Length: 266
Image 1 (cartoon, one colour):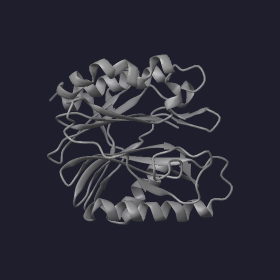
Image 2 (tube, helix red, strand yellow; image 1 turned 180 degrees about the vertical axis):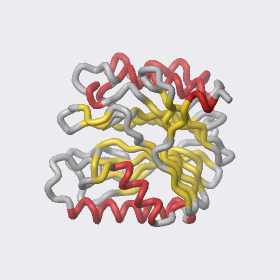
Image 3 (tube, helix red, strand yellow; image 1 turned 30 degrees about the vertical axis):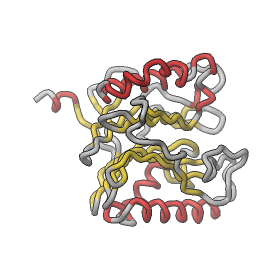
Image 4 (cartoon, rainbow, N blue to C red; image 1 turned 90 degrees about the vertical axis):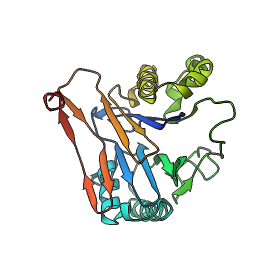
């Protein structure tokens, strides 16, 4: 499980996620896992994160996704074709894995499609109307939230919280915490906004019942309209290394990137 927050502001779109992998019982398997991908394709550039099943068969979920995209040369195709193939591959793979005790899985896409802000998902947990289902569906579906006007007439930031929203108590929900700040979030630097979203995820990690599924180490990806990504790791404890998301482009794939702080100071 994890928590993913997507935010749309004037200058960029932002995706922030934690890095924790847990068992279905909430036991921590890895607290610094790489769970994000930056994808460039023929008509879009998007950040991808996931919540749900940490491992598909014997392969970590993010590795399965990375290898699937790389093998299909996803960066050379349009986003619609990528989504359709990924949906079909997930359905085929999951139908062969009959012995899974936990089967929920959702991939979230945040970025720009044909120059316009875009948010979508591939899931067996959320139906094509955007509603959570009680038990995992036999087929994965492609979906996106109800269309929103961009730029919004009210000039307020648009946010979507995914993953384990139950970890945010009603009296401290993201909606209530930032409702009075949505206009400021819309205009302020997206890098400042990314840091604030990290603080919301860390707040959710303290929930007495569901917080164990959410980590305090986070990754923030700022997706700019000009086909660029700006990525930053937010470790709970200071580290000389900064871990970057995996990268997929046309005939290129880079995984498990890390940059040492000493190199960045040169």
